Image 1: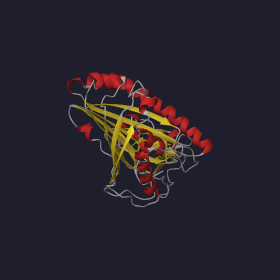
Image 2: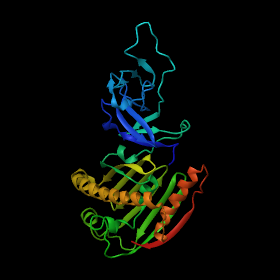
Image 3: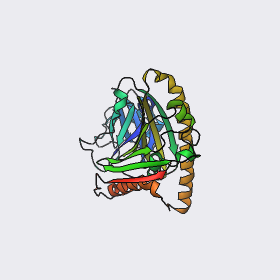
Image 4: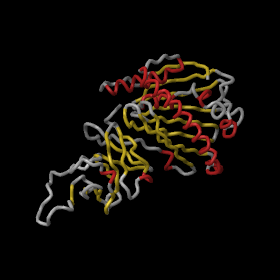
Length: 338
């Protein structure tokens, strides 16, 4: 797992007037809003008797422990101990670890690392959310496998005709797909051109139609984001899949889907929601199974040429974990059946 990066802690709408306990990168954290409604993230432990602060409450912008009522402000400093006499003072050393937070575009991001983030290190920005005529929706899930394997799943095209067969693509008739894989400064892109551009499935026929030319790109963005985009004439759809490592074998999935379908954009939202929920459920179930088997027997993968993109992504992740540089602008063309 990569630690010196921004990860989504939760959606902004999910942090209300109650503290929210989370686990990210094996760290127990608590989120709450201070008196200015700013998101605050502290280590989820009261230094008094080590009870989780997430079991307590938000008291006018301070987090109050459920056990003895000790309160801490947005900087993690203890500012009130109910049992103290008026003449007693609270030690200035009585603090809780505070994490860096950025709230943008409906997400609260946290930096859990062994150093401070540089000014140039920012969470990914979803350009389409700030554009007119774009509709959007959201999906959430958790799966019991490593974040690396979750990234692979959402970068992978060959599984779609089988795991999602009938909903998205078909496993009946295969055609040639050509992919151009290229390493970038922040990850890998995979541009896919299909010999037969029809995506023979219920979703493809409803949204794309017959004989439509389709541009398809999968992009991995460090540390754990997969952007999938399709363009069908004037129609455009993007999926931002943002993954957060809970621990070595558990991953949180936040999916923001945005699309521009002109005047019918908002009318098709129920359709996008229906298919999105079903497809994500299928992915989570198969990833859970994968994680269960890997826990039992270890990870021992075999690959074909269609797995080239995932090998590139894995190589970059390994390089970054080892604090080594990876080569950019490395390009490779492959063909496979899709």
